[in-house]
Amino acid sequence: MTDKAPLHELPLFEVFIRSKNGLHHRHVGSLHAADAEMALTAARDVYTRRSEGVSIWVVRTKDITASSPEDRGPFFDPNEDKMYRHPTFYDLPDEVGHM
Amino acid sequence: MAEETATAAVLVRKEPDREVLEEAFQVKVDAETRIEPKDWMPDAYRKNLIRQMSQHAHSEVVGMLPEGNWLTRAPSLKRKAILMAKIQDEGGHGLYLYSAAETLGITRDQMYDQLLDGSAKYSSIFNYPTLNWADIGAIGWLVDGAAITNQIALCRCSYGPYARAMVKICKEESFHQRQGYDIMMVMAEGTAEQRRMAQDALNRWWWPALMMFGPHDAESAHTSQSMKWKIKRSSNDELRQKFIDATVPQAEYLGLTIPDDQLAWNAAEGKYDWGEIDWDEFRNVVNGNGLCNRERLETRRKAHEGGQWVREAALAYAEKRQQRAASAPEKKEI
Ligand SMILES: [Fe+2]
Ligand SMILES: [Fe+2]
Image (cartoon, rainbow over all chains, first blue to last red):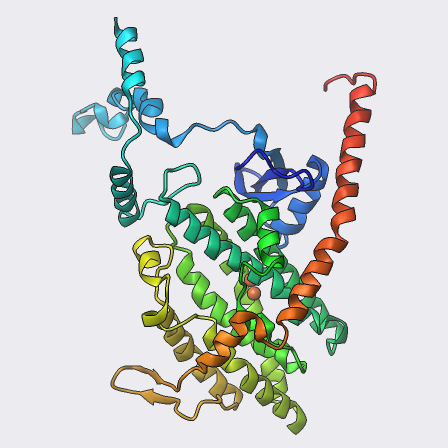
């Protein structure tokens, strides 16, 4: 979390794994490595010891831009009052069947 | 006009007061909403978690050492490969937990420093020596067994990253306990000498395994607040009893005797009654006077310092490669 990691600490990477074709990559954890390539090898060693994945992404943690929880309300607010985006907003007669 | 009001609102927006925040936090915890890294949390919650999670991570890492003692002397190639895989898992567990703890704002280096200078603890079970091969069986069966009992409860911990790490760890742990019990079965069915070794291992590991659950609830400094915050989901005594009830029949199956002459089935309560832990021994080991405390920390220190040049070399290499890539003629994107 802190940006002021001491110099000798290796950079932090977030690890994402696709468990099988057809599924999204999913965040599984993080690790320290000198660069992305070494992070990839280390991720394979720690996060896929039991064939948990067919593809790995590693991303420098500091390169991730995240929304902040304090703005959770205002940031996501615009969606709250658009109930017409949901199918249940529309009352259709039973006669039309499943739609 | 609307814009002006918005600006004004930002200007007068005050930091919500701590009591309100704490109350909202507790409501979230009570509703089983997981707390995530950037969410507001009381300082004491953060501190408590950092202490518990780093201690847990250190235990995984130091826990590799007693078993490492038998890697070169495992009785067969099969056992050696299994033990190697098990120890590698424990290293991975350490990593998952360190990473989860880092989301709370402590750095990996700070945690290593706390372990090496003795200010952070690790499970005192790992300060006992592994004297014969059956100890490797007893560790998998009892020590990993006790750890699993603890960790299953932690899968529902209120802090998201900790709970997720626990789920992943629990998936890997069951192999650890089973390979340990498998070793015990072979020894218990073996020669008289092998049976004697198995019994000896059980005699030495039983009580320290029970100590892994920590002090009795009445004496546990952190329990009640941790339960309220749902960092802990079951108390030390509850988990210990659960472990005993599950393990006694397993010892009976092996034909081995649990070293507790007060152990007896209590039909009325549907659980085992058992003797008392030697709390003097517990405190002694926690305070650094166990058989292997110094050796374990010394080994960790050497490993950490010995790896320093590797980390530096890896960084230097990464930097060199980056510079080379920067000065190389531009490649076409494909
Ligand atoms: Fe573990
Ligand atoms: Fe384990």
